[in-house]
Length: 249
Picture 1 (cartoon, helix red, strand yellow):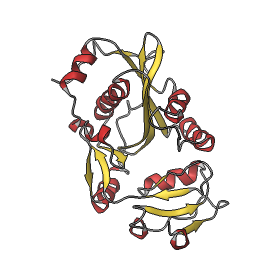
Picture 2 (tube, helix red, strand yellow):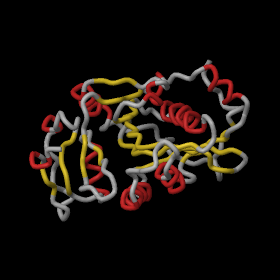
Picture 3 (cartoon, helix red, strand yellow):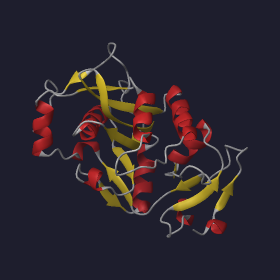
Picture 4 (cartoon, rainbow, N blue to C red):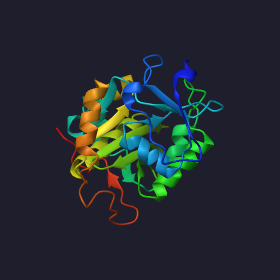
């Protein structure tokens, strides 16, 4: 890893600009800068410019902008027949912003096939601060009153930057993504940034595009406000049954 070629950010200057994303390394793909901090101002600036933090515990703080970029337009979500059948059984209920910290911690928990996690205590605190500022949000999947899946990310303009998802029940994270796409589409969001390729997200309709195209889309959508109804809570808690929800045919 050619860290000596990277811009080193000042941890005491959250307003310091990032280098252009075209300066990112090819190997490892998208590594742009190191150091800095995880303040709300720094993170806002990063996402606004197509950059996100990603590093393991004990590593320097690393900032990325990969090429290509995995994206999903909410209205292009693919729902398999088996998942649609599961949703219509009414096994799940859904909500948003009702259990943000629990969702982040669920994403940080180790899985049998992923014993380590990049979501450290510092990352959790940073995104909880973003959530308190109304910038980071979560979607939750419930079963019999128990949180069994969800996802969280950052919302700016008409873009939702997905960070991570988890499940403890079969199809619970996919169901959360379906619910998220439905709500985001209703609220006027035009782009979901999925960051890097995963078979899980590709199966739901995400696809890779060149970073240059992603940056053009970002510039077009980041300045446009979503619907005034976005993230507005109606009732406590605002849960939606998967059996009653109008899933697309």
